[in-house]
Image (cartoon, rainbow, N blue to C red; front, side, top):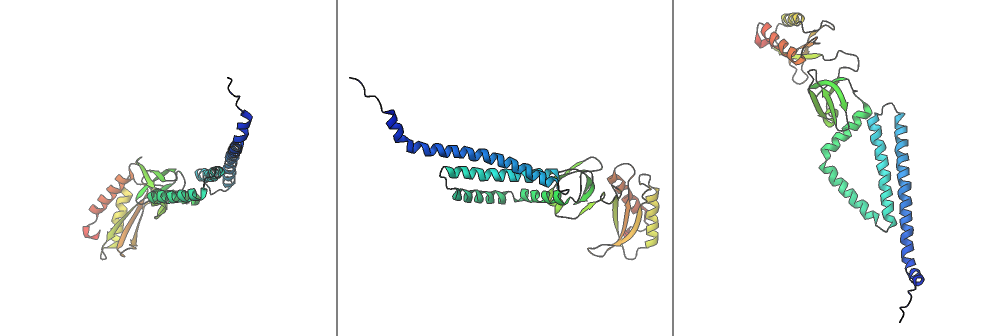
Length: 266
């Protein structure tokens, strides 16, 4: 007895209403992915090109913003592809938003450094090669990234400063207006009864006699008042000509202490 020949045409006709919609959805998803990738690449290129015409935008910041545009378009593309297969993207967006909020709270320190890095790259209070003093750290800027600033001191020590610390406090740039790089400043507190002329002359003589202090520009010895408690101050500024700046500063402090007749004057 012969087996009955299966009716392939009939079975395909029965399955076609189920297969064809999924094939069309798959084809549409592939087209969305292809078009989305093309648009994201084009958007990244146009963003980088537009920002490249703005003189205040650093190359790293330009690439960063261009990448944000690219990944934003790719995210929209992914959500559109999921909606092609009936996935409820509204709830998915809510989940992504909640997860982003949790990640943002966990990484708020890192994100603050990122935000400060973006501000530094936009406003550029200093450039690579500038000599700066921020938070008691003085040196030459070697690199500025989105998260930290790398500074090299005069004695060739690397200092990594988080960008939030750079942006959030006073910064001295000794290069912007062509001032001498590496100027050392020492502030001596004085008593109100200190002989000002004699004190100034003694300190000036020992500074002028120091062979490691540059004569041009000439060192200065001036008086000032502390902004915090109005304390009388003797301010000495000089430019080291040779040797380690910290060592020379220590020598000047030691010599000044010994040169003054009354230690109470300091």
